[in-house]
Length: 118
Image 1 (tube, rainbow, N blue to C red):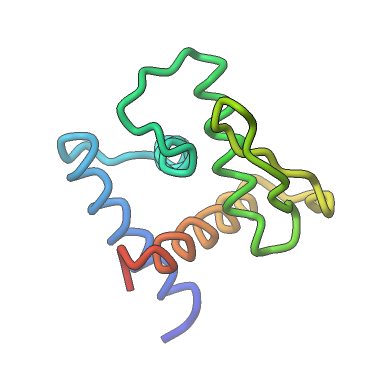
Image 2: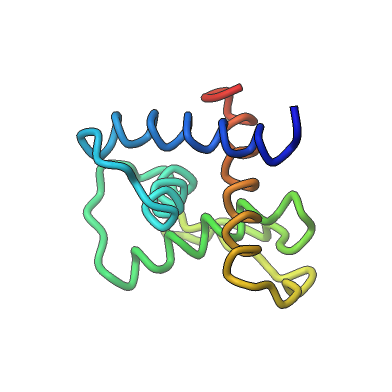
């Protein structure tokens, strides 16, 4: 099976799983899934977050997702429990479609690593 087909199938499986669990079956978009990963990484799943905190959660998720690709490195967790990352390598300029594929690939890898999908 080609890598693109496998990614597409895994992505669809993941979206269905997460949408059923967190949005009453309405398909979550890429940003929604990134937000969920940020909440998971912070570990405060029952908190209500302000708008700026939601953006920070998405940033945490992006850093965590792109860490295995060598773009970020975990540094520390602050007094409030928020993880911090440093930039190791700047992301190359990517077109919107390329960004989407990279993030979907990173998200699928994250959930494979967590054992939620195969």
